[in-house]
Image (cartoon, rainbow, N blue to C red; front, side, top):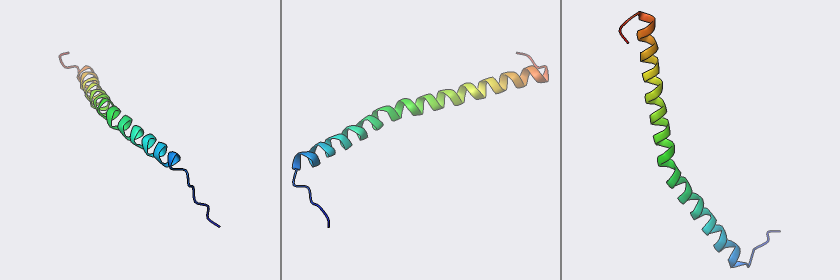
Length: 59
């Protein structure tokens, strides 16, 4: 037998919590993407640098 909740405050607070979570994800997503791009650039820079050292090229 299914039970229906008659408490509207619970539904309202749940919707607020979901909206807050989505807002937090949207706010932090830009920082996460910037961190990933920055890390990828540093990784490729380091790989190029060590490649030049191994090949004996100019640093």
